[in-house]
Length: 103
Image (cartoon, rainbow, N blue to C red; front, side, top):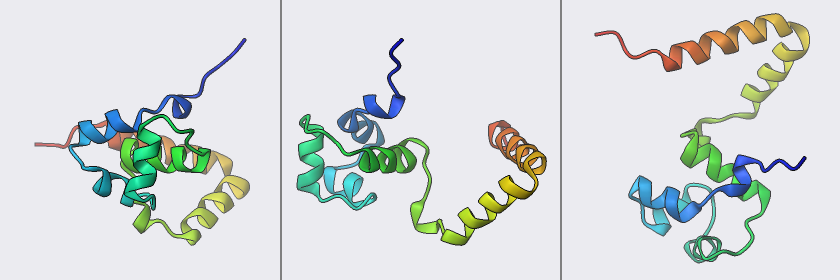
């Protein structure tokens, strides 16, 4: 049975156009030059780290400028030391994101 990961089917040109960004704006957010991004949009094989950054920044809308190493260290610590608390916090965070704002 063959499975295809969503990240492997990413169409960067489609995502960029839906966001209304030019190539410079779109690709610079993940540290790729405009010319490099143009090549990926034309079908050149995109390395997995670039695909993942594209997914995180432009699909998941994560501001990578705000991420810090210690954030990941805290997450890893919590996962290892208190996995049930980690699961509960993750569930609470997901439900808060999905709820529409109170009026």
